[in-house]
Length: 172
Image (tube, rainbow, N blue to C red; front, top):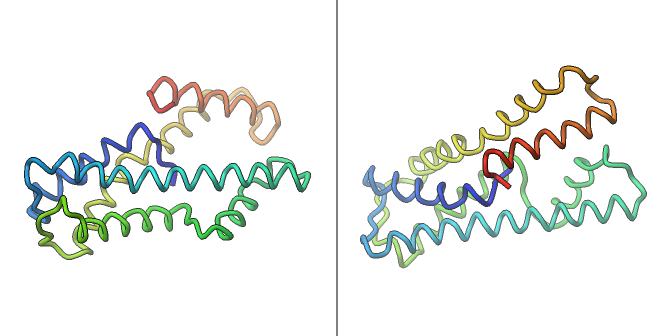
């Protein structure tokens, strides 16, 4: 799961708004912004933990003398050592954290819906915001038809295209 810092506030607003709108939770109007900040804090902590794992992965690659092709495998090892969940497990973890916090938060007056109902709604909101990575990947690949995939030139150009597309979309 790739969670961009710039979309976190939008996800927080949408989660609280959707759950309130559907009658799943009750939040006093004066506390809506605080409830949104609670959700934001959970996602920002996940992003910070993810960055720590990525940095540890880079250091391990340098220390071991591995080339970047081992990044995913080493990252998986680093995440496991730190107890950090990635991918779908990461998304499930963040959603579980949000659900737990809704129950204990002093900014939420009451929770009416069952966890599985709210989990599905929150998951749908995340998926809508996280599909951006797939779109960026498709667009970058479509721009690189003139290069052979898997070559070092393709890898370098792919990273440049992804960064350029993210910048154009305001994700960086």
